[in-house]
Image (cartoon, one colour):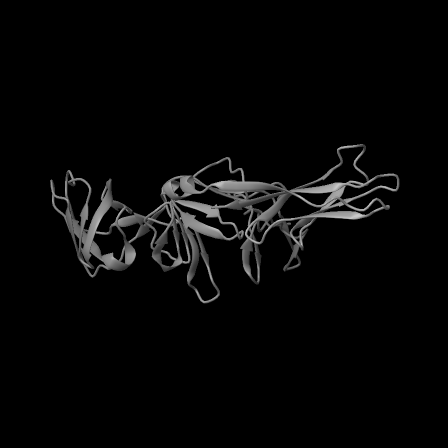
Length: 283
């Protein structure tokens, strides 16, 4: 018998025997990983790789959601920039400043971060403070969007930038909230028709809720005879009640939203009831 092979990793050892000139393995050698290699948690499919057994963290070892990201999110700009020490003027080569940055964006040049205060062309912009050491022919980085939702055509439908500002139907954000057609809103409010409108604190403070009390005619004395209290067309029904100054209020009242009115009903033993409506408008 002659030992011709020993596996490097064990146990068990793989031993081959030389018998009459033929090598016969005593058993198949197992597939073993080196001691410092662990299996990957990712699985592969036709659509890509996936992980189903927990949360994924980037910049954190304790992710609290399916995907948790902590740290700065920077996006490299096209071309290279140069800024001299003690200067706040930034110049670029093959850059696209007018397309990739806006006033108010954060900008990382070398190891220092700034805020963009002006963009005069694709190759020239200014920052809010002088660069202390200067940087030549380097890539500049701007804070990328925290969230971007696009239409099927690839247009931005909603963007939340690195400062927390929100843009809807307009990716160029410079305010807390920016809607399509470059309309900025300090506040949103609901008008009398229920539509959401742009406004300001000043405009909202001038709006007033005006209400009036409307009492209908007395009903007949038969069972379930109705009394109607109508709100005029510029008012909206906001309250409805039954009123009887003599005894119990019949079978109660209910709002008729379709006809903008309150309806009260007399009981079998009643002598009549009144419908009372509260009607309001914003002006």
